[in-house]
Length: 94
View (cartoon, helix red, strand yellow):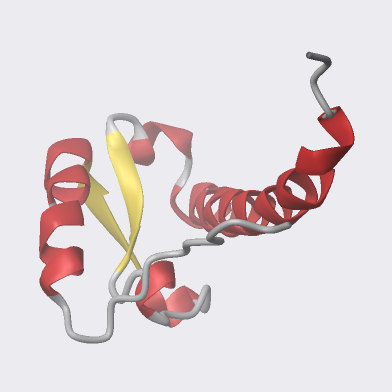
């Protein structure tokens, strides 16, 4: 039985849009914070979105803050408890 690779192309394209958008937002936040504070000040730190992008937060500089890597990445569980949290789930595209 041959695999139908074309079957997954629409899903892959849709997934790539969401993944790239989130990654671009994170990279933009990091870039501007490095310009403002310098690379040395951000070494070992993450740029956190106070209201997560997945929970409807914006990528506006007023929504950014500097946190330690540990604090920022432990917040993932808190975000899921937020009533506004909407995970990006594409489901199955046919």
